[in-house]
Each structure stands twice: as structure tokens, then as C-alpha cells.
Amino acid sequence: MIDLRSDTVTRPTERMRRAMAEAIVGDDVFREDPTVNRLESQAAAQFEKPAALFVPSGSMGNLIAICCHTERGQEVICERRSHVYHHEMASMAAIAGALPRVVESPDGILSWQAIERAIQPKLDFNAWTGLVTLENTSNLTGGTIYPTEVVRAICSSARDRGIPVHLDGARIFNAAVALGQTVADISRGCDSVSFCLSKGLGAPVGSLLLGSSEFIQRARRVRKMLGGGMRQVGVLAAAGLVALEESPGRLHIDHENARLLAEGIASVRGLQIDAAKVVTNILIFNTVSTDAYTFFGRLLEQGVMALPLDATTVRMVTHCDVARKDIEVAIEAIGKAAARGNT
Image (cartoon, rainbow, N blue to C red; front, side):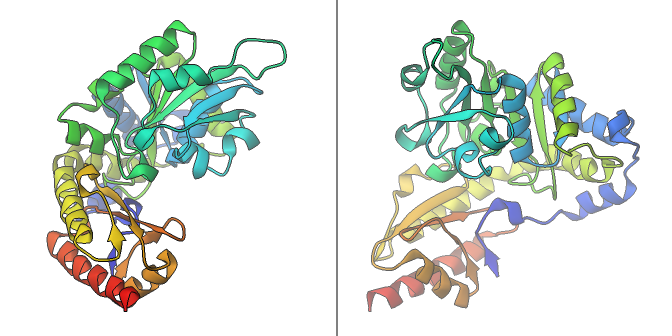
């Protein structure tokens, strides 16, 4: 199978497996796992943040940030297609007691002007705005990227209003590579940042949450409350260290493969995609003449996996386990699946 459903399906490299087998471990709840400590220190240095915390998943990292930044009954401003709103089981409401204030912006990229219009006045009968969340890259809009100057303008203006900003940077390394900047540059000014080791970076499990030392101290307690306190977890952190060292330097290959795939899809009758908008490793296209779930089934018969988002749209994601030759095979399969819908 050529699996283009997500970059979460990647398998650890041989070097990651060796590092996991040889990892020196301790009890991380007691802060005694040296491999975890090294991963957190390295991530904090890379992002130029004071501290970091290893967490089981990106969703937990985002939820911890919301819990730490907000009070129960406050609102969280987020883009309509954001991961924290769509794919985290309404945890900000169910667990953090926060209400999403949804804003729609072109290509999933919020502006300060759009955010400012959504900020609630501090009246006795309103849910006050407690947090702004950004997502870079924006998953459900096809891996779109926040311009760095937009992030900085949002952070500066939000700070003036006394509102913290959390960056869901699940794929922030993809954004940094596409922009030709560092992850520290493109997240500077954000009060907290989360990023995934288990997506484009190819590690099997885990995310990091970054922020001030005080913020991470609170985050550690919330992680334990949520059941995320892990013990001899250096066996996983070891793979994360390899991912941080090796994987960012090859992400441009995934971006090139995504553009090749998008160009191939654009040439297929019955499918619609703006190939020029594909700048990272995610692409979303419309199945004009065929139900997307039917189209998915036809692709599956030919050994290609994709992810239908609804009845008319399909997402594909390139990653380190998909080579250029796989993309060429996938384009051929996509053409055949679409042709069946046009007959």
C-alpha cells in the first residue's frame, strides 16, 4: 500500500529503533529520565524558549496549554478549520471548561483584524476571551503557512490586550522549511508552542510543549492530572532526539513530492485542486464528478490510501515513507479511479 492518509503513519527509522533499544531511562514523573530531560532541553534550545515538556500527543499538548492559559468559562479564539476545534474531541469544553470562539479566515490563516473583532468585551454577562490559538501549518486548509510577520503582529497586539497566544505547531518544521526560517523565528512572541515528533519528523510517539519555566511547571501538573505522567519513557524520547536531529533536513523532499502529486491531480479530469497553493506536505482536492468515499474505495483497490474529509473532498499527505516513485504510481492510480467516475 502507498499510504497517503497522513504523516502520522510513518514508521521509525533503523537509527531511531537502535536509539530506543539503547536509551538510558529513569522515572520521568520524578524527572529522573535523562533521555527525556535531554529531549526537553534540546527542544527548548531549538525554539529559544525557557522550558519544554514531553507529552504523549499533540492533542494533549494543546489541551494542557488551554488549561494553563485560561480560566473555566472563558473563550478560546480559533480558526473554524483548526485542529483544536475539529479533531480534539471538544476537550477544551469538556475538560478545560473553555468555549471556542470560531473565526473563519482565508486559507485558515487568522489576522489580528479578524481576531480583534472576536474578542469579547469584559462585561459581567459575557464569557471573556482567555486565549488565541494559531495553527501552523493549517491542516484542513491544505498545509497553508502563517507569514512570520502575521504571527508577530498577532502576538504583539494580543499582548497589548492581555491575551496569551498558543501556537499549535504540529507541523511547524514543515512551515519553517517552506519559509526558509528557523522554528524559533516563526514562533517568536507566542506564549506557548506545541509540536509533534510523530508526524513529518517520523518518530513513533510524542509531542513537546514549550513556554516559560513557570508555564511548563503548571503544564507538568496538568499533564499528570490528565493521565499523561509517564515513567521510563526515555525509550520514546530517544526516537524523538533522532527525529529532531535528522528529519527537518529532509522535509523539503516531502514538499516536492506533494507538489508533484498536486500537479498530477490537477491534470485529471473530474478532480479539482489549486496546485499553486500546495507549499508543504498536505494537499486537499475536490472530487467533482464522484462521491469522495466511492473515489477512496477505487483508489484502495489499486493500493493507494487517502483520507476522505467529506463527500466531496479528499486529503493526501506526503511523508518520509513515500518516495517519488510512489507518487508517480499514485498519480496513475488517481487518474484511473477518476476515469471510472467519468464513464
